[in-house]
Length: 369
Ligand SMILES: [Zn+2]
Image (cartoon, protein in one colour):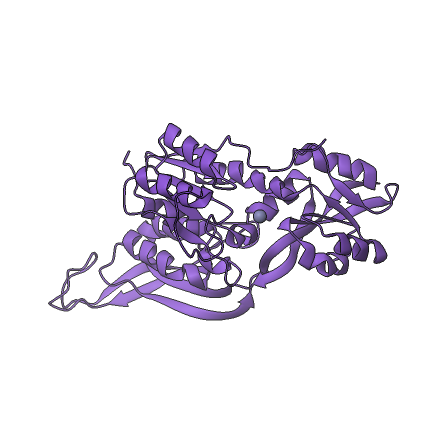
């Protein structure tokens, strides 16, 4: 097994959580150091502070993947008398890179919001605030029957044929391929100057446009022919939009009070602020990790009985009360759910020697008394 470099790790990560899913102006990506080095251990954390950096040093991590960007506002200086400067100094001295995946990881399928919705046991979840609609293309490739399986596999692995909750979807038709190799050719089948007739299959797959180039490269690598015949079609169909937050239903209705208890237990917090009548029955739930004040109207419009989000403002809480939308605010720190989520997603994805370690530092600044 080979030790990957940082760039390879991030390439793999961005197949799941691509940068273009981030909200405009969100400072995601590499924040400190370089990805151009071997990385054997990656520390995954919600936040980067000095304790997390110490943990990375102790555990021998060469890369930190964080949800919250450590350099959020433009820096005017880098003084090492202050915590942020000290932290960056320490990172550089120990050759530790920091990469941030923020709103792109919120939006990504299986990202922060899906993890929260799953933890709450929501079913039939949909996106609460659509932010991105992927364009789709169809790839059709002609392949000798002997290599059908190999080509389908390569396409599927590159993300082709992912439709809703299904993957590796494809359609195969049998037919006849004809070609005549010229003198310059080095044909897999046939001889130069002689017309060749061979049984071929046409494999069709749908893929998101942004993933197409990678899939085509993988398909060509798996294909036996010197010149691969394939078509790429633009489709009018659109994939279901991706976005922030989720809305789904609980297995059964319950009182708001019971639901608040469920939130505390499932999201592992000692307390939650609740807006609304504690006896109100709730079943449809909207959830948005982090600060979801801005999306309270969207939560109401989605038909949710209750909205779970963090950092709720006093006046927004009053607005929610006025529109009869219950809110459960378990705090911003519930996004720590991404730590295990990223570790699970990234571990053993490639046959390489690299460990993904969950940070054990508690970055919750609040204590509940
Ligand atoms: Zn956050």
